Amino acid sequence: MTRTVYVNGDYLPETEAKVSIFDRGFLMADAVYEVTSVLGGKLIDFEGHAVRLKRSLDELDMAEPCTKDELLEIHRKLVELNDIDEGLVYLQVTRGSDGDRDFVFPSEDTKPTIVLFTQNKPGLADSAAAKVGAKIISIEDIRWGRRDIKTVQLLYPSMGKMMAKKAGADDAWMIEDGHVTEGTSNNAYFVKDGVIVTRPLSNDILHGITRKAVLRMAEEAQLKVEERLFTIDEAKAADEAFTTSASAFVMPVVEIDGVALGDGTPGPIAKRLREIYLEESIKAAV
Ligand code: PMP
Image (cartoon, rainbow, N blue to C red; front, side, top):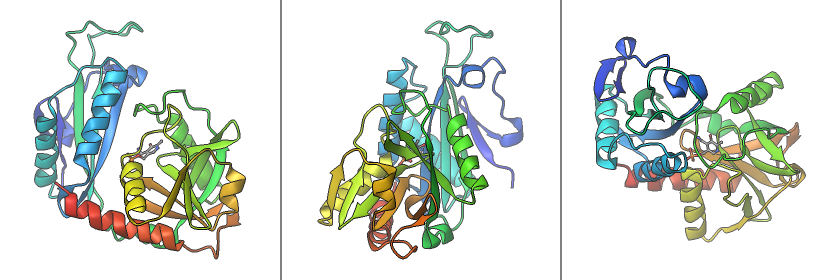
């Protein structure tokens, strides 16, 4: 089936959707994005993604392409037109183009570009990968210093994923100044003696929408959470570990740099948090 996508006000077959070659998203990665999951045909934590999008745009002095209500309507319409039961909605906003290439931002009346498309992912919630758990490697974090802004500068995270694949693993956690920052496309946690440890929010990591929800749910479930810096050696010596993201929810981690955690299968806290997260988020989906 040809997807119907959204570009600057129009719903079009994907083969007819076009963006200028002078678009600053294409030339300069001058763009931000969001990925919202869909379960049972409904959007998971749309509000969180809309709020973070506004924050990313504000941090970059980029114009808002439309209102939050319009954004919700576009998301819902694409889910319906593409008959998505389980999957993702990808949204990208760029600073647009005034028809040439220049380091200086184009004039303020330049319209931002907005593009949305769906990805059909049957079995997203009942994921085979989550039952096995992920193997990760650690790599140096050489990304720019504003990782709290969700920009499309994803070359290094993409390279990190490829380094992991080459090493026979599933993903990579990044390390800066001796401490784990986050995964290539997720936030990172370990559990030791019943305490969940994760890095505190700062400019060094993306403020995950799933992170926020999972930490709230963990506290509601009387689990102990410590937001602090941690080393990869602490994580390797942990009872269990996991990651969170809008596209994989809570993903157990079973191996770090070749060292098995616990008995090498998904840990009880990660499994429980995945269940709680899915149950609660599906209830609140719009
Ligand atoms: N960190 C990074 C670097 C990411 O790319 C992502 C997912 N885009 C996350 C964390 C998780 O954020 P969220 O829960 O909002 O998907």
